[in-house]
Image 1 (cartoon, rainbow, N blue to C red):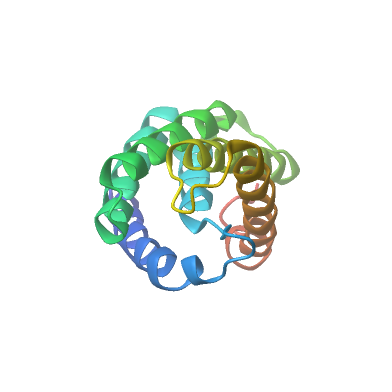
Image 2: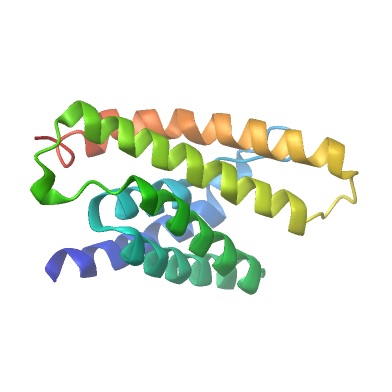
Length: 162
């Protein structure tokens, strides 16, 4: 129970960091998504239902900060749902290599789903869909996956150990 309060506090901190720090790191209108990485970690470690709940809550907080309340909540919910398919139960005795692969796969899937939804629904520059989708999905996912690898090696390696 104590770790869930820690996750809630971390979600607020990451939502603030996403809004005021990471959203400024734009390359061709795409920025890294730390909230998707957080949602993927929750989904892999705690399960799909918990990932969906945290995704919705984190999306609400991010939406309040950015002004896209409904879209951010939808994106967070979808990210938690798709990342939850890679859940590794604690009693499964999975190796750290398998947990790392599942975390990377969940992050990649959540990032692609979130960036795809965002590129379809949100278009501040009125770009055509054939320009906006590759730009947002490919670049946003690549930047976020780089951040995922760094996050795993510097912060999550001990948490996802055997």
